[in-house]
Image 1: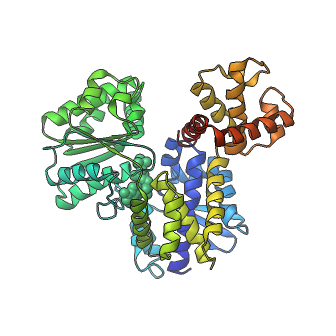
Image 2: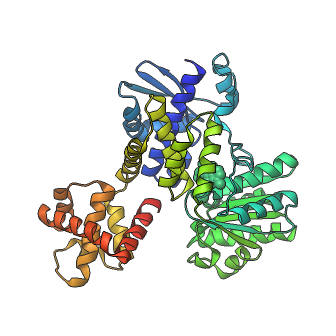
Length: 453
Ligand code: ADP
Ligand code: MG
């Protein structure tokens, strides 16, 4: 297999991973799917490289169906999927494929350093700075120049897919680039919590604390997940104080500002707020275009400017989506498909459908119920009380739009209603959205909540 083919395969694998990520929980994805890669395709067989035997067994036992389902979407003729343990990925992969892969730099999935947890692909140099993130970026630069001095802690917040993780990891990578003797650790909040739980289980809490004592830089991503995690909050508070008192740099990210994180201790909140708090917002058109160009050049690919403008116009929500759509466009382009407005619409539809398909009906029900503060059973029962009618219609509409359920299937879920009733409800909401700005916004928020958790 040539380098090109392997590269192509792994681009598709990345797409497959993106879809899988939407279908499993975040911790599941991180534990079992990160650090996997396609290492070979032999006719009807695809071989996936994984970091350990444990992961291999687990994927085979629990996720083979899921993986097969997604692989089949791209490779109809693949019949078997095998796993191979790739121990020290960077070395062994390039060893196995030395002849074929001249430069292994494209295999970025394998670039996570086990000591720092940093992925080397996140750099300042490939982070596009626009008006949406320039403050956050300036603060990050300041930290790299003088860690622990000016902005401590740095607290970056913003919505999903806007570059928080990229920026946080880049801070770690840039600091190490300047001084490789510094002790840097990046942790997602999930990872922090699950490690803590493990250490507690094994009665090794002191060992857990020790792991943080000689850090120079501590980076913790997505701290909104600390909500209601009392023990983790307490430990983080003490670790924070210990490091902070010694002039060590601490960086946090979250999907919302500290004041809006529910159920956390006041003293921890005030630590979050004690340095610099900056936000990252969705990129404007120019920035989106620049990001597309950056991503293209990283992939060593080319698309005409008109195509990039089309994408940048259409995909506005966040950078992850921008990348996802770009990848899909590249696949179409590689099949010699001329990319025009119509094709892009089709690609977008496909992209969103792929995303939406994976949303479970119970999740939609949960979110609609809690949004309108209605007990779920009133949404499902046939009561005709006025205050339930609209939420129930919206629920039906979202089940149709996001979970792709048929009218009869929705009717069945919602208290055995006739499919014409469901159809009527969906059509009504669709029409009302066009006339009623408030309703449109409401449904937008609900969709956002459902899709982005
Ligand atoms: P978040 O952590 O905010 O959810 P990520 O940092 O994971 O978002 O970003 C999602 C994707 O978008 C990543 O691949 C990241 O590299 C890319 N990205 C986000 N912002 C930028 C940017 N300003 N420049 C280049 N790439 C970006
Ligand atoms: Mg992130």
